[in-house]
Image 1 (cartoon, protein in one colour):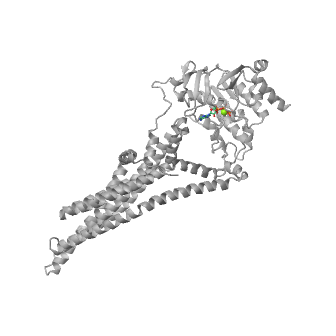
Image 2 (cartoon, helix red, strand yellow):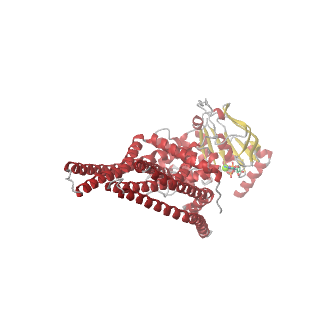
Image 3 (spheres, helix red, strand yellow):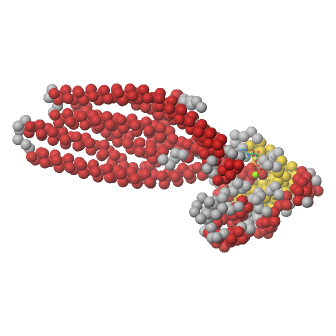
Length: 607
Ligand SMILES: Nc1ncnc2c1ncn2[C@@H]1O[C@H](COP(=O)(O)OP(=O)(O)OP(=O)(O)O)[C@@H](O)[C@H]1O
Ligand SMILES: [Mg+2]
């Protein structure tokens, strides 16, 4: 794949590096301003120490030359210089330890805040974000970089700062010798800086353009590592095919990076040569000055060290600024995610639902398409669920049953029409208060690899764990007998990820999930094919209990099993975005249309 790089973005990127740096600094500052200050002080002192050393050394050399010329030694002066040198040495070792210590603290403290910020943001994003391919690319970049990129960038910022201290100090010292020297340094440094920045932009360009490919790469490599996928893939002999795909992706990335590196090989060598020549010329200039007695012998040593420091400073500055430039591009993706605004806008003064019964739910003339999709899932669709009603939704795969549930939870907003909860528009409701009324068990429920009791307690996490309630919920879902048989009962760890965990069958997991739904004890219980893996007898028992226990509660059951559906007060048949039939089982059988057809078809299978 060819990568494209938009040169018009260049200035924008430089600006963006500055903005990202500023934002990172302010983020770090908010995490621990003292630690940041301590680190900055430590790096600047360690940048200044070599200058102090060099200066004391210069004075010592000048003393030696003075004595060599037959002058009497100044013992006081020599002793003082040695003491000062010793003190500087002590400071240096202290600063090294301090730098190490503060660095370590920062390195372990920053991720705590970062994880919380990034993960809580990601987990609060609306569904729509996760389905937008472009944003998914950003998320992908963030996912494999938010743990360490900001830390890298923080290091780069600190070391850039250190290099700047080093460079400025060197320049001040050298300027006292000859301002002309500074000019030489700048003439050399600026083109190199520009070239380095360009290189880093190009490598980002490659990375950016490869986001789509990288997404595939991670997807395929996960497929190859997941227990659930490996089963099927082995039988279809797929691993070889996927391995080849991974290899091709990696080889392409290698090729593009190699092209880039080769392109800059010559330019880099040239810059290195040029800076070497300049520094040697400057050294000659200094020695020449000494020969003409414009400076002392000690000055030769001093300025040589300063020049070496300047050289190191500039080298370090380049290395760090280039890294800063590329890291900032990754880190800016993190800020992009942190800046993501909710698509589902909560009202300014949300209504808190305060009912102690099930609310009346009305879907009024709703129209809905998934964002970015052309398929009209609902067309002028209307449906009312009265308090305490047990209804069933039936319809072919893709008819829109699950979507209806997602709309009721306001995961998406409607294109038009309204959903009224006890007469209040869903858009005006406080969602957290509404969710307390909703007990939804999705088709693709989550298998939490936690203990059994935690798995169930997750249904009502805002309340303390009460063992009796958990057992009652498990009895209701028919999970209790099977839990009793587990070695550690309700304390049993589930799943195979953690030590001592046991794997459950699909139906057993479903019973646990159902128990979680029942524990919530919500006024509106929605079960989206929650019993597809549970045998028919158990399913009948479970639903018998649901109906008995939730007399005043509304229940929405979505199922392809007509033996379950037939017990509902009212059955809605959804087709082509609309309700085509509704009524009780008897009524629908009498009409003898679609429902009756499907029912008879299934019944025949059991005869
Ligand atoms: N996240 C999504 N983005 C875009 N389209 C979607 C999304 N989820 C579902 N759809 C589409 O919306 C339609 C309704 O899907 P939905 O999941 O509601 O069907 P369903 O009635 O629950 O089917 P099933 O019986 O298979 O569970 C389908 O055409 C599907 O392709
Ligand atoms: Mg569905």
